[in-house]
Amino acid sequence: MQDLLEQLEAHIKNRYEIEDDDDDFSVDVHLFDYGYIDSIGATALIAHIEKTYGIQVTNQDLMLYPLNTVREIATFIHNKKER
Figure 1 (cartoon, rainbow, N blue to C red):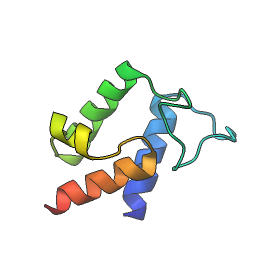
Figure 2 (cartoon, helix red, strand yellow):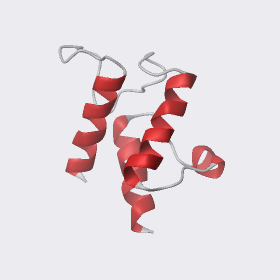
Figure 3 (tube, helix red, strand yellow):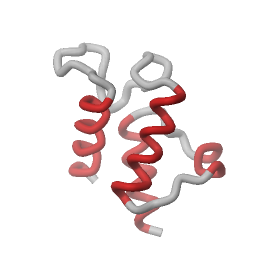
């Protein structure tokens, strides 16, 4: 799980151009409320998750599971792959 968390954090920081010295960014920050990712970015992130981790993110998943932080997204991916 820690590897997954680190991979996802690295991808998000790289893809959304988040500086390493950004004091607000952490694996527990709300990515949307803090403006790191917008709706277009969310669509790209879902596509990345589906392609990279071989899972499908359904509309039901988006309604049932909190996917607002790096930690929440990593937990979702981990649990979805375990099913």
